[in-house]
Amino acid sequence: MKNETTKLRFVNSLYELAKTTPIDKITVKQISENCGLTSQTFYNHFPDKFELTLWAYKCRVDKLFEEYRDGEIDWHGFLVGFIKGYESNSKFIMNAFKNTHGADSYLTKSAAYLSDHMKKEIIFYKGKDALDSELEYLVHGYVCAVLNIIAMWIDSNKSIEEDVMVGILSDVMPPKLSCIFAP
Image (tube, rainbow, N blue to C red; front, side):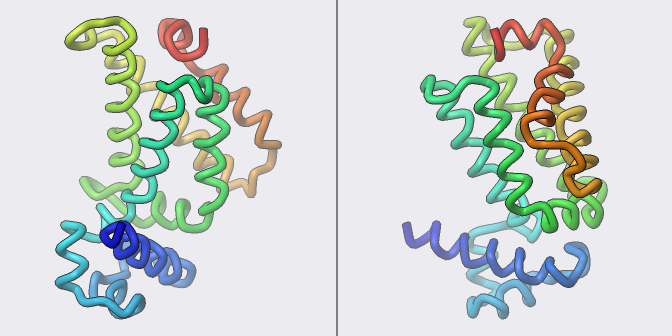
C-alpha cells in the first residue's frame, strides 16, 4: 500500500504540473520536488516520466478488464468506464497525446497496453496459445480507432453525449471482435 501511495503522489504531482506545462517539458526533478519526494524515490518506482504518465491508465485498464472477465460488467460497461477515465483527466490526457512522441508517445504506449489486454482476452476466450494475424490486425485497428476517436471527442470539448460516444465505439468494433467482446 505504501508503494501505491508513493506512486499516487508522483501521478498527482505530474497531473498538477501538466495543468500549465507540456508533459515533454516537465522533468523528473520537478515532479519529485512538487510532491516532496526525491528523484531517487521516483526512479525506485518508475524508469522515466513516460511510464509514470501511463501508470494510472494501466491501473484503470487492468481494473476494467478484471471486472469484465469476472462478469461484473459487459463490453458496454467496459467502454463506459474507459471513457469516464478519459473524461475525468481530459486536460492531462490531451497534454499527453499532444506532447509525447515517438517511442514515448502516450497514444502508442496506451494503444499497445490496451491491445495486449484485448489479445489476452481473445486467447482466453478462444482457448488458443496465440492469435492469428487477422485478429492481431483487427485488435490493433480497433484500439487505434477507439483511442483516436476519444482524443478527437475530448479535443472537441465532448461535443456529443457520453452514451452516444459509447455507441460509436461499439459500432466501430469489427464483427469478428464483436462476437467475442459484445455478443
